Length: 172
Length: 362
Image 1: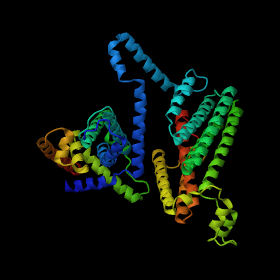
Image 2: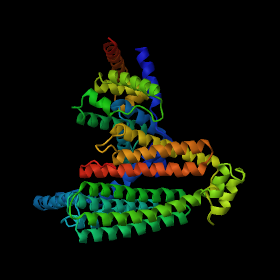
Image 3: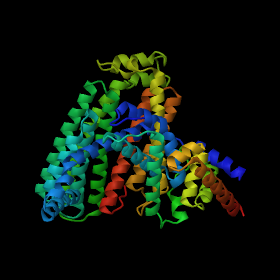
Image 4: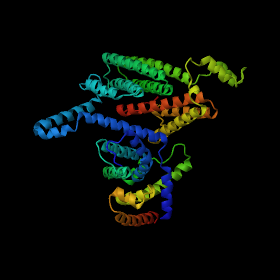
């Protein structure tokens, strides 16, 4: 898409197309709905500003994911000192209106997912999120990471090994 | 491993953005983009190029001046009448707020915010023993003036057929007055000084302005859903008139000349809107409860002001849900609005408590 200075209608279309997936991606990296919203908002803002300044974006999806990923890295650097317990307290999993049992079940589910994900290095978290939360194929992941599809396959294979270990450690 | 992936997939399905949240987020992005563009106008791209041509000391002075201006504006936000930076807060910061309000709704929101700010200043002065007669008179005059403007802006919204927005904004203004009054009353109850009569006077003025705004809001609500007449209520409770014919009596007796929303929107649409409002308020109530725990009993055995407002919001939510189940859309509309107002009051009181570092009991 060669679109320097994109029109707001085009921006709206891109927003509608990617907002939910980006929000989910951010959520499964930071495990806080509010922070995920802030990060996604900032990613779209940067996309808007870049295009308004005449920047060409050939692949909006890859651009948005790359920007979001960088923002998540900045965010995790700032949050480095937070313990897992603090991060758990930070989360807001229970939906309003859910029964106590449902809320408990959902909380346990998210705690388990988060418990495993937090054991993984950031780059592995990123790959697992792109593969299993964003359902991206190798080429799409390669576009975001700006590496070749072959390297992506190798990285993904190693990431899955690390995930397997983390699951085993958590359960064992 | 497979089990974990299944769980990951299940967790993924639980993370969604509602259409309203998406819309809110989109509006936030657009408004932040506009704000950044505005800010960029103060420092155009050529500024940095210029910096390469002028001597370093001059450039450093310009940059320093800009930093001082920004930090002055920031510091001015906490200033009170009588402080050196107060004119900056009033003329610069609030001037920018007014300039950026480019729609009718944003204009009312800014005016309501000004009401909140003036009441907060009166409260802070009172809490720190700095409220003198001159400041009290000035602040009351400012609050009165802002209230007049807000009411006129709400009336303009109504004229432009944005009745539901007008009801919402009138409700926000009302919440600002009522919450402000509650906080000021809390300060009054905690103080034992000579200026109590002054605080009481300011509070009386605020309460009186709250009544005016409340009357506006009630009239607006009535123009959306005519209030049932005593005759209708009697019929509902088994009186002489058939309950089936009662709604038309209510409309004939109470409906103002202008169109009601029931003529503009279908019952189903209204129902959907009400359900959304109810869900949104349920979320706010649960957020308050999660943050502050359940109702906090305070020393005197009563509830603190925030918990009290949240409790009232909850009671009204129940009423709104019950009325909706019974197909009483007007009742549900009023109760849902009341519930939203109470949440807004809780937000304002909580903010004031944080600022004043005191806990207010009822």
